[in-house]
Image (cartoon, rainbow, N blue to C red):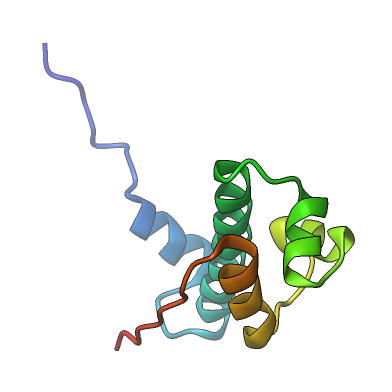
Length: 101
């Protein structure tokens, strides 16, 4: 028996309806906030993957546990230099960027 899917909405359509089409101010704000959220989750997953507490990571990269917590919980903007230091000194990694148009 085939399931009906006529009443389903794609995630893209949901975003369009909720925040506007890509390129609108509200959609751009959503996208920016979502990228910040993803960054916090990435830092948290890297930290946990290396078996570090927030305090241990903070000590390794010269910041505070509170600041690490704020980054992970999307409550703080993070400076690029701080992000690079967390990745380099905290995790022993390298940060690479790309630009998409």
